[in-house]
Length: 61
Image (cartoon, rainbow, N blue to C red):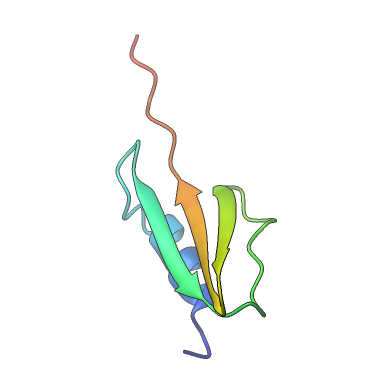
């Protein structure tokens, strides 16, 4: 997918994750998401990479 990075942008721009939710994205080694504000970590399994993004749970008052 040439525009796979737009998936991450779209998910967060349209609030598609609930607080406490995770987004796991499988992608090529060429893509880096380390500068994204919700990026948590990237894992490598052979030629496959997974980036993990997290929305913090809302603090209850």
